[in-house]
Image 1 (tube, rainbow, N blue to C red):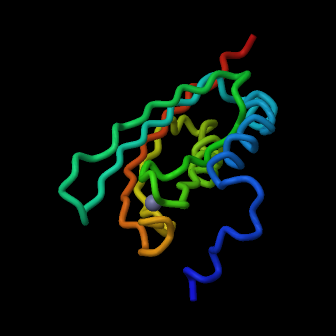
Image 2: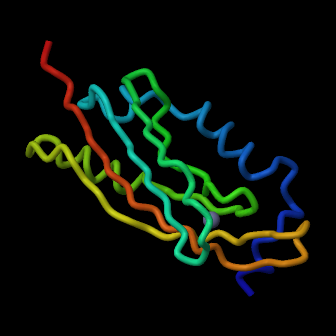
Length: 140
Ligand SMILES: [Zn+2]
């Protein structure tokens, strides 16, 4: 059921491209979170169902002019999933006044892998461990 609902047929733009476009259109960090000077997002991936080497970890450093966009596509090339850290970032920023600068957590990919041109489909098993670090803006 879940796989059928995720067909790509009504998409003119592939999902990854859409994510990039949405990223470029996102408002600046300073607009969304005026109290934040800098935000570091560290992503570490692992896939327990394969023996292949895990995808490279990613480190994103967002300054005030960077787009406030916190969705990252799954590093698995044939997967349509993404990891959405928007809620985690929002919660961290909300806690900044109480001097809580760090947050971490993990989530699993909810995407579907399309192998062999979509002949074989399976739920993605990619796991993400993330670390967030927010630096509050200094009062002028
Ligand atoms: Zn995935």
